[in-house]
Structure formats: structure tokens, C-alpha cells
Image 1 (cartoon, rainbow, N blue to C red):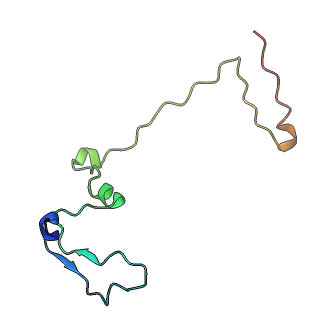
Image 2: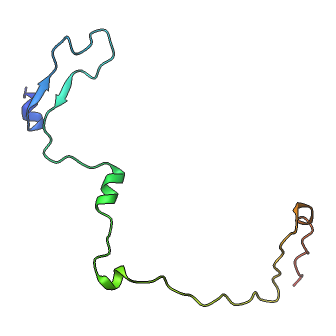
Image 3: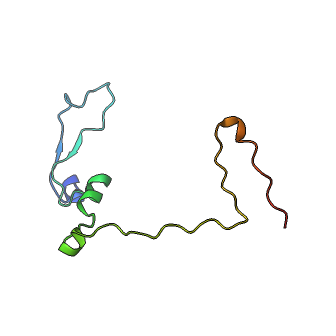
Length: 96
């Protein structure tokens, strides 16, 4: 049987029986003292590894300006109700 320190690859400290909370709910008192490669939690990891703008041309870049949208085709009608009572009075769709 192997020891705990050989399983985890580092020192393991066992809490004394008084600290285990006999009769109480506990995690067993096993505490790993060192971790060679601790992992970051999700948000911390994403903030650390997010892409950053490094080049001046990228930092100073303005948002894209798009042309205005073309008007709707004639078979579509934009209905903007004035209040809730006229919302159900939409015109019927055209028959093809």
C-alpha cells in the first residue's frame, strides 16, 4: 500500500482528531499542502487568456459604418400599432 504523499506527489497534512469535529460533519481532515499547477476558475481564466489589442492600428480602429438598409419590398408592410387595441387589427397577408 502506498502512502498519501507518494499518491499526491507532495506533502499531505492530517488534522489532529480534535480538529476533525468528531460527531460533526467533516471532510475527513485531509488537506493538500502544495499544488504544483493550480488551475484558475472559469472567469479568472477567461479574463487572463482573453485576446487583447496590441497593435496601434487595432487599438485606434473605429467601428464599421454600414450603409442604411434598403426599403422593404412592396409585399411587406410595416405595422406600428399606436396602442394595444389596434395591435390585433393587422392587415391580412396577401394571397399568392
